[in-house]
Image (cartoon, rainbow, N blue to C red):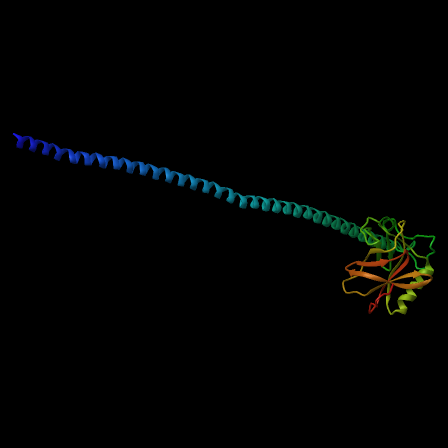
Length: 273
């Protein structure tokens, strides 16, 4: 009997050992799960950290976006300036075209007037007689209206935009007809420098100035021509500086108004005044 009881107790112990071991393992597994949970939490924390890092990255990438926006505004401002300058250029080109049209109309009017006077064979010439007194202006109304003087088929006019004392302006110098003695003196001057007289005019202005850069429109002038400009100063012909010579234009630097003669010469000497 004792043996049977001993065997039963031993059997019970034998069965209970695996159960305890299993329970212990399950508890360890829970610990593992807790550890896993902790790992998951840690991982979550890590992920959260990564999320924070991602937020930081978004802030950093925002800086280049701000720079791009600033650059875009600068480009837009430059484009607006370019458009404004283009408008100014277009307006300037329209003004030039208007002046060219007026000059062309003046030439046509003068040529028609000269032809009409020649056909009629009477009256004073369309320009003026070199011997005409200064008190008489033999110009046509078209010439007077367009501030122009014709001599020998050559027209001299002044259309404004004179640079006064180095600055741009809307000032126009008036051109008129010299007397016969002045014309003879201008012709003698041209012959003395082995040149030919293009035209001689009186220049006047109501504006006081120290220096003036005057653009004279003169028919028959071409690029490369040698055009000497002289002015009577103190009873003598003094050569003026020519700033530019181009097609139908001679730009002259002046320090006073008065009688001005335009002479085509073989060689253009450098003016000292």
